[in-house]
Image (tube, rainbow, N blue to C red; front, side, top):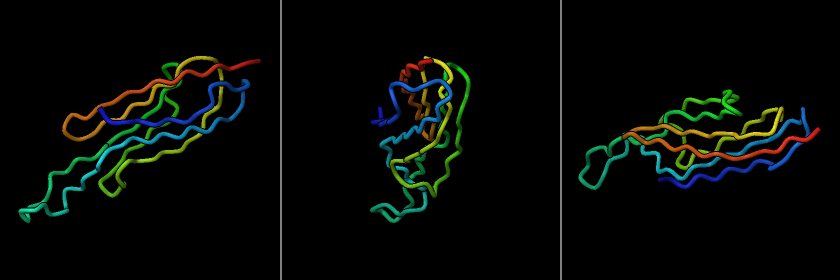
Length: 107
């Protein structure tokens, strides 16, 4: 399992715009770099990232081999109600990881 770091507020006021920062530790091999034997190393990249807020998708991105290792994604959403944000990454070789963070929304 890869190490994911997510930074977002634990609480917000209803209607407030919140910044969410997500980073996942992943080597992101492009498939073009030669290995020690001179043959290209197999491609291993994260292909998709998405975030759902109480089950509704609020952000999604398609990633490509040109993305650096440990992809760092910043996006914004509006705090509408207390609940859970679910972050999902999918990639080559069956890679899949999901993390969840709670947010409390007041008045």
